[in-house]
Each structure stands twice: as C-alpha cells, then as structure tokens.
Picture 1 (cartoon, helix red, strand yellow):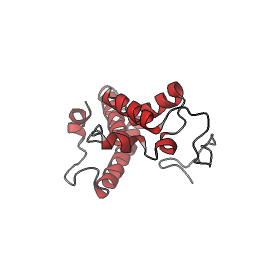
Picture 2 (cartoon, helix red, strand yellow):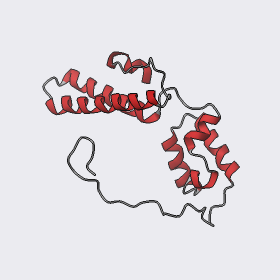
Picture 3 (cartoon, one colour):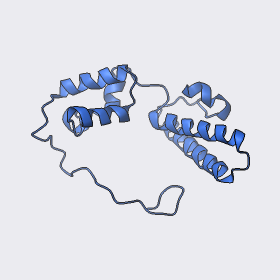
Picture 4 (cartoon, rainbow, N blue to C red):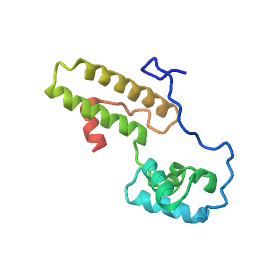
Length: 151
C-alpha cells in the first residue's frame, strides 16, 4: 500500500513479535506500570514519550501486553488526557511552524504544498475524531486560532 501523499511504498523495518505473551524477563507488575504511566502523565509527558521511557529506562516492552490497557486508556481513566488528541496536536504544531516559515519565505512553493498536505491531514483527523466523539461536534480547525489552542 502506498503512503498518503506520496506514491512510494513503505520501508521495511522491524515489527513487534506475533506473540502477545508477557516475556518472562519483565519484572514489573501491571499495577506498578500503571502507577508509572500516571506519574509520567502528571509530569506532562505525551503517551508516545511515556512508552519510550518505559521501554528504554524500565525494560517494559509493551504496556498493553502486560496491563491489558493502552497508555491512552490508563491516562483517560485517571483524567490526564488533553482535550486535543496527541496526533492532531502534533499536526497542528507542524502547520503553525510551516505558516511561520511562509511569513518570511513567501515564494517557497514546496512549503506551500507541504502546508496544504498537512492541513488536509488535520481535516481528515478532525472528521475521524468527530465521528468517534473524541472531539465535540462544534470543534473546527482554524489556522488563526490554532496557535492559541496548542500553546
């Protein structure tokens, strides 16, 4: 399958093992992992950064395999999620950075196209999150208000 805005195929990389069993070498219990996730969530870390920290510093290969909940579910249970989902927030930040770049470089057509592609991804995600009731039905992406929402 090709990528969204390019005609190239994906690159090969390593994948998770097919077994969903908890490895024998994992020393942490599910409750300990949940408390670590909550602790990192209170520090303001994103769910992706929490997963990386648990993997690299605590030797937890997969939170979902051990706790039977994803990091986002654990954060949602403890009311530590933000009103805008993480992936949408990152795309909005990228669009803001491109707009700032275009203020000084008005003839940069490559960046203009990149902005269009990024904003189309934002609008596509917006529709998905509205359908799944993650975002309210009245929420709309507005480039002028985007800086106030993200910062």
